[in-house]
Length: 149
Image (cartoon, rainbow, N blue to C red; front, side, top):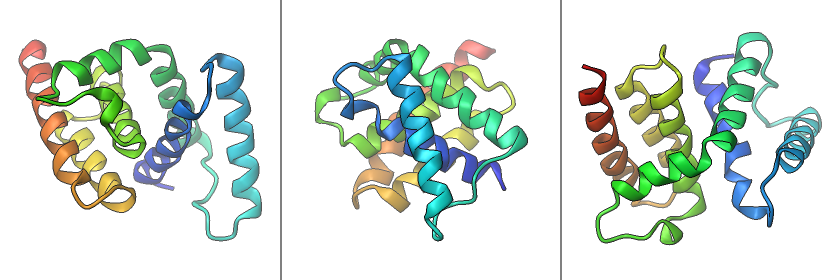
């Protein structure tokens, strides 16, 4: 399995966050179990993550959960004439994952986080999703890059 596939697993799990009236640790844990159970029965699903890939998925899913307010604040700071509530759930999940990576995964270059997010947006989002995600995350990456220097 590749990091790209592991990101897709993390994206699928993070995508489910808005569907919970109360997003707490129990809901995240239950969603994770249900998601992995579904992988075992769906022949067309991505292979179940193992080893370092499984560790990455867990780190990303729990990292986004634990830093959700901070991550959403970053998104809101870089929206122009747009409200976070108007962002599609797919685009929001993609950006949450990418911003988590930019802030917390030191081994992921900022550009790679943006590029991988755009690829996921192409696969799962609307026609305008890749450009929207790229625009927001490109600005986030530039700001984070300046802070790292």
